[in-house]
Image (cartoon, rainbow, N blue to C red; front, top):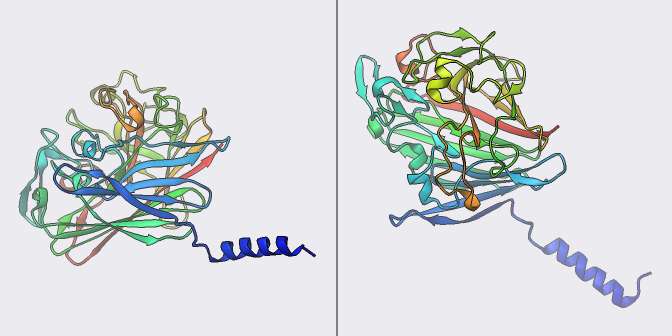
Length: 377
């Protein structure tokens, strides 16, 4: 039997543990001012194993993602900025939600039901990632939807009729969930009051060695795709679906990203590396999700699987990063410092009748899911 004094101490400790509030899995804080009177917020999600995702209502973007390596050491594996203003002025879409239409639309034009629409040509001569002020530069409305061991936050946005030239009042929600088994799950939903086109994706640049560790050329990439969509000199699909077999675009077996990146290939030279879409095999994973790709870093032992309900995967190897802009923690991101794995519909789909459709009819519901699942070798 415990002495009376020790018994009292034990009871006090037990009472404190029973009555103390549980640590929140979601912490909301101020990210910073945007320079126009608005302030961006930061939503920090932490799961039971200690992994953490920092998200902002600016651009519904992922600011940082901290996961363990094979030794149990944690590092931030996505590129980004400490200052939210830089996401408006300097960002090559770091961590962003992309919309209304991810990737390129030729000459910024498309027709729907016989009516022509002219969009901004912000990537001359084409539109890229939704226009001059895409979803990545909007201040969304954030809300905590789950504060449990698998925390989640939802971002909501109204894109009004005529926004960047697109028809229909489009209501969009993006929900991020950090699961107990170290997956970042992203659910997209949208509705419109008029027929329109929609193609949403996530645009983080991943470096599984840590965002300050150099390039990703030694990362091993495997893509579950037998075909890709070749592009012209302005990065618009030609409309063909070509086999990857015996080409530099063959990632059916895991290989180092840098193995063929400087090969004598006109499309690679024009893009300064990979910036191309792969046609995913359907049914490569259970249910409606496809196991699109697996990225592995031999140095850290981190592995990332990309699962999605989308038909394509755009792979961009950070070809235009140049180290001139200060990033998180004063880091300088040089060429190939990260790789973006962007599940989406194919570029220029509104102008390519045989590509999977991107039309959202009035009153219908757009739904898509992408999951970045982390483990170790």
